[in-house]
Length: 178
Ligand SMILES: Cc1cc2nc3c(=O)[nH]c(=O)nc-3n(C[C@H](O)[C@H](O)[C@H](O)COP(=O)(O)O)c2cc1C
Image (cartoon, rainbow, N blue to C red; front, side):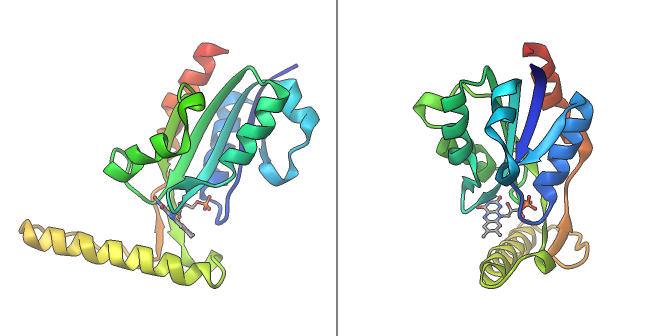
C-alpha cells in the first residue's frame, strides 16, 4: 500500500501547482481526478484532494468524496484554491459550505491561487472578468474610503498569489496522522 496520493482538479493550473508541490513534499504522486483509477484510490493510505473554488464550490469535491467513501480510504485531507484572500470571510465560508455534517471532520486547508484570463474559455471568461473586475473596483473604493492607496501590480485579470510556503501546515498535518 502506498502511503500518500494527491488528487486534484484544475482549470487554469493553480491548483495543479499546489498539488505538485504537496506531492513533492510527500514524495508521492499527484493525479488529476479525471485520470484517477479506482486501484490508485484503493491503494493509498492517505489521500489529499484539492480543487479550485467556483461560485463557492470546490470543483470535483463531491465526486471525489463519493468515490473515496466507496473505496473506504483511511485518511482524507482537502484543500481549496480560490481568489479570495486567506482568512477572508469568503474563504472561511467555503469550508462550511463544502463539508457537510458527515464530512465536517475532514481536515480543510485554503490557499490563494490566482487568475489567468487567457487560460479561461468563453463564456466562463466573461463571468470571471465580471467577478475579478468588480472585486478590484470594490477594493479600490474601500481603499479610497479608508484614505489608503492600493498598489496595482499589473492587470487584475492576470495575478498569481500562489506561494509554496502556504502548503507547510497541510504537509505537517498529513505527516502527523500517517
Ligand atoms: C467560473 C469561476 C468562478 C469562480 N468563483 C470563485 C469563488 O467563488 N471564489 C473564489 O475565491 N474564487 C473563485 N474563482 C477563482 C478561482 O478559484 C481561482 O482563479 C483559482 O486560482 C483557479 O484555480 P485553477 O487554476 O486550479 O483552476 C472562480 C473562477 C471561475 C473561473
